[in-house]
Image (cartoon, rainbow, N blue to C red; front, side):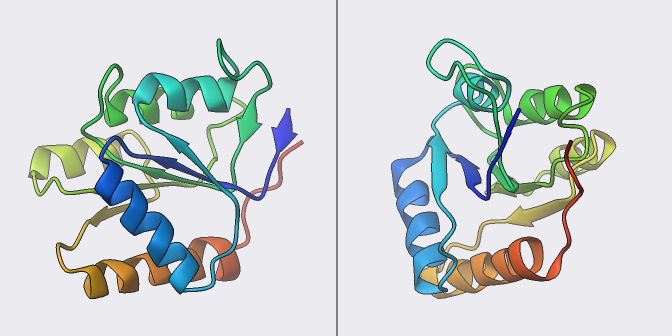
Length: 144
């Protein structure tokens, strides 16, 4: 299984995708970013599938919850139910402020739950903090 120092951004909103990538670059987080625009594509990238025959385990998954085809919660559930990806760092990055979404995310084993700020400056700061912690400070799990 291929282990990469990439970020998997699972985001169906093109504006939020562009903002996230812009915020990463603005904050000198230079990891390659792979974008999945729905939950099914995210699972194909991680586990290998139709358009991604070779599985790719990213260093970090930034996961929106409200996705077409397969929900973010279902993506998280499948990541956590697979032995090879169970310990993969997953950060929910969503506009949802629903307690049930936050609770379910933590029940399913999310590492962090961040609500997207509306203001770009605040959003950029949130991405900086996520990047600094998960890609610089945190020592990720060793993968075989």
